[in-house]
Image (cartoon, rainbow, N blue to C red; front, side):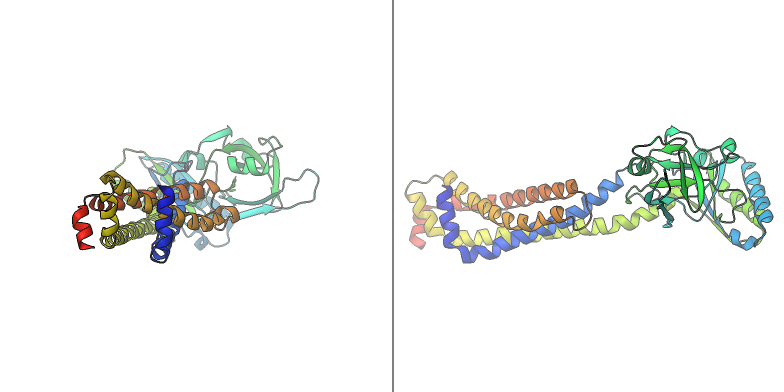
Length: 394
């Protein structure tokens, strides 16, 4: 049966070439789109590692305070004190110009020839204070967040994430380890499990959380955790407190959870758009296959009638046409696979190989299912042809 079908396909090789290339191209488009979608969804389902609800982020132009460090210290103390006195506010933390979902990023690294130096190629960092852990509530897997005792110690305290530990500190004891960068020394007090601050669709990166000194003039954000049962009136109270303390300094307050949704929407738009394109492609391919099959059957009525006259059952006719399309599809997919497997082998787009494999398998399944589905009705019509009528027309 298969040998006979292969002969029929070969005899119509010129007519089948276009259909084969169409199926192969459709597979490659599906594979590319699914690779992009699966890669993004894989990152999306990785845990953020911290809370986003009930948190407000105030971007404040502290630079307007000038160069007087005493003024910076007193203003930040006054602002934190006033905010903590508001009923419904639980914790307040200061940090530099990097915050979750703000599209801001600081990176650093260390390369040193000193004996025992901890070298690391690159790590993202958020410089913040001892209250940051109470605001975002990251999950600590070892040690603790730094406190007042650590701040007064010989070294500046720092917290790292699990990825930093696994990538750069494999063969050392993490807690109590002193690492050096920016010509300063930091002692690790804790390890957080995850902290994917660049967004829900971002890759987890090695992270550092150095301590932000109260004398630092790098502060940009005040992050405020409110109780879960507060009403919208808390927004006005926060604005009034900041305006009262900061006087004529400009500021903007936003909700971290709303920032998360807004940033994620930018990634969902191309995903939905590409999936819609795939849907449109599938519909067009299905219509094309259906039309080609019906046309082929109309041109092969004599062949079908002769086979039925010689005793072929309707099931045999049905199986022949479905089998032809599945074998033709297999040949097309082999061509498509020759191109598709180059992507994981050469790692073209820095996507994990398991994503490529999942995309290939899914695209194969969709194409086979589509071809099988589109073959059923025309094949059933071929099986229902009356042999006497078909041979008379021929």
